[in-house]
Image (cartoon, rainbow, N blue to C red; front, side, top):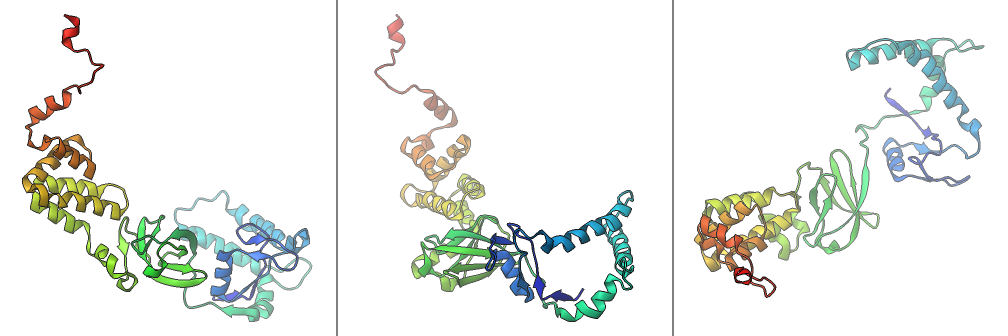
Length: 314
């Protein structure tokens, strides 16, 4: 069918009607968007008036009897074969004369209903979803479904916004006004950024990426590169990973590449990936110990007045 009806009459189900009313029912945003795309009108059936939907429910019953029932014992090995079988039965159902009438449903459609239809729009409608989000200090919002970040103008930092996304696009609204538009990117823990959205104080964030940190870690040493890679592979927010990497790599200016690489080697053995772990290793001097020395150092009991010691039992 290349046409679309100018009026839709849904029942008062929750996915269509937010609040039923005799005169002014409140339609859901998703259905209103659908209606706007196809230039149609939504007019829900009246509440407590079952006759408003009697024709529809009867049509469903007839279709179930004349199409579903004849196919219920058949086996189909492709979707195309099933569609063809349904199409044949549907065509026969529409062309068959109606009871106590001399014309068919197809005759009514061709002579009356088709002239009341509107042409379909050029673009196919895409179902849209909406979520609330807060604009981060990095001038991005986080779309949790994709685990991806999209930029908005920096003047909206800290504001609550609506993210409306479809299969291909992401739109961001503030007070019913669209402030950003992006193509939807299905890449976890990454940024989609429009440079004009970013204030100068935050533009450095767009320059960081995993390859840059890994390359920096490689310049420090083999173990540092491995440690930075492990941090970046962790499932956390990108800016948290970047800040951790930046904090660790910046230590090389104070302690040198050798000590930092040894500290990363020790931390890899502990399987603990954080800036706090690297600082702890450096403060305790574990980066200067051999593997055996580090083992015995970790096994030593801490000094405490409640620990009796071996002499107590002599």
